[in-house]
Length: 225
Image (tube, rainbow, N blue to C red; front, side, top):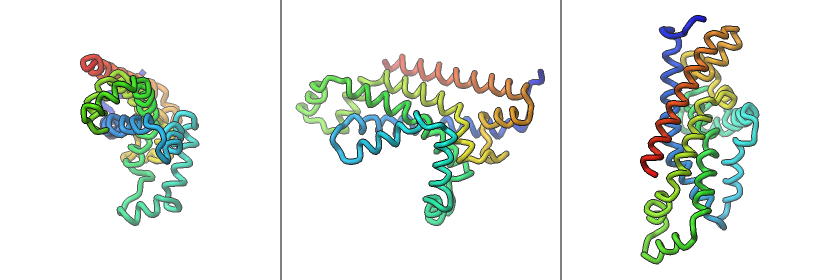
């Protein structure tokens, strides 16, 4: 069995995957938590639609979701306006890969946060209001410290899910060698080319990296618990 260690062709997908994973983690830790908080607050217009949109990646087949996003964000859809306005589109770009990574992991951080906030005693929130705290201050000083475990667990699941994403990434990124091929897509490429030893080594490496991310996040969660 030949090891791919020293294979310079892996440098790009490895660095791209690391960069996308880091950016996705930051977005999940901010946007995911904020969306979970928003969903925990009932009675505002559009809440149900937002809930459905966030939950959709959990129940939709990734390749189908990717295809629908390809149609929506392509030049004949919203992507045409995006390209005219910003001078660049999302389809077959690293921005598309980032979008895919964020979307597939988003429900795994937003939904646990939503459930954790909903389970908090209402008296805790009322006490904060009585002491003169605004909604943002209540969230940062009261709610967030109480749901640290849920945030940590959500980030664990979301990061692991995003690292292994193939279906949506394939549709939005295009698997262009040297531009949008992540490590996960390199495994796909190796399998389709019949290079099963290479696929096995890459799978082991990605699995080890995913495990390392989980261990680091878990330790961070425990230290803040």
